[in-house]
Length: 266
Image (cartoon, rainbow, N blue to C red; front, top):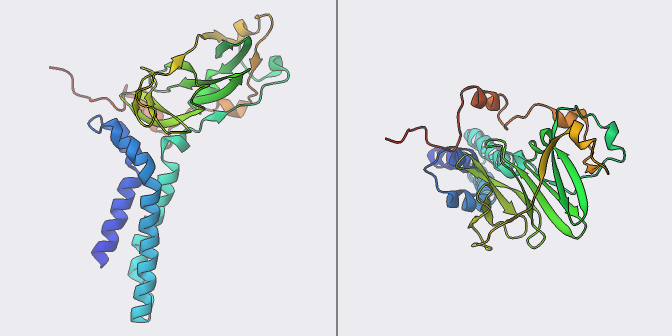
């Protein structure tokens, strides 16, 4: 019985952390990440509930609390936490319909900061990239159109998509050194760089790119009229970090490309 408890605890931990190692190891197909998105929470919760019930049943049978079950139960509880917090959807939370600044010229922006400037349906809005990188996706309205501004931190690809027909996007995963985006309604996975669906209810489907510019704040301020700018504070420009603190600096310093094989073609 001890072996069974620890075996399920370790299995639950492996499932909870799979969103990380399946994106870092190229040999794992993106389809695995897709199915993992749906099973990670139910599986880890089921293991924890089963562990608690098993502990209570044993306690009733032997008329005392089996203290040896506590360590594996703690591991099972940790797996539940990791299943919720370690997934890219939660690590890089997409922002839906951010507030625009009433007085953009008074924002805490430096002249050399870069902004993605999008004009759609006669509406022009600007988003500081140092703010977007923390969320990877900003969903916003442009009159009757819905636009998702996507920014992959690893490959620095910036692509706004017209998602009026499918709804807002979120970060679904990460594969081949590029972000996987997904729509909130059907959870279909799309490779950001190619704009093509990978798997899901909408597959096959191609996201529609829309034109945009990357301008410095000094250039944006000269535009007439000045575009709407998302309301940001100094806190929004903190240094970018992965869920594991310090890991991003090591990745950059070592020139690593997570999700791609380190083997050179022969």
